[in-house]
Length: 231
Image: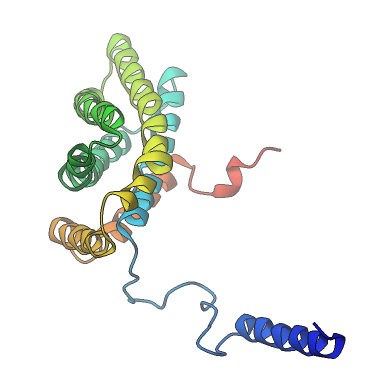
């Protein structure tokens, strides 16, 4: 390429690159500070939807961990905080989130003959988790030392299983969904998930659950994210 021609080519390329970086130019606008506007429905993919719900689950696991510390250290713990947290696990995670996986995702992987061993373990863990949640709800107001120890054991078992459970779904199962469904089917799943969410939890849906979890974190004094920063 002639030097003058090459210089002009690079100059034009630089202008195009800069144009793409300027908000509002050529249809490329940066998101407004603060995220979406109030009341604006933000479309997310079905896998992103499930991963956000895993984020909610992780925050409940933090509540479980704090409850476990207090119970194990013979410190005060409002049993209602723990029972409310377990109620969110039961109603939102088990009866909604996991049902989506069991009804919409797992059968597709089984039909495609892909990751079937993983799906089988995930199914088993869903059932085991529901049994542990039932124990936590039953023992949440435990008073005797023996029952409190059973509660600590149940909480620890739930946390130990769900950390790797959700991590394996996020890093292996969900990314593989694209390989077994068409783009149209993938988008349709997102619509099905949103419809089910609003059907069960009203207009607030996921966002309403985040608020409820935040309130429980406030009661335990673990809402402030800065408190988790090592000194």
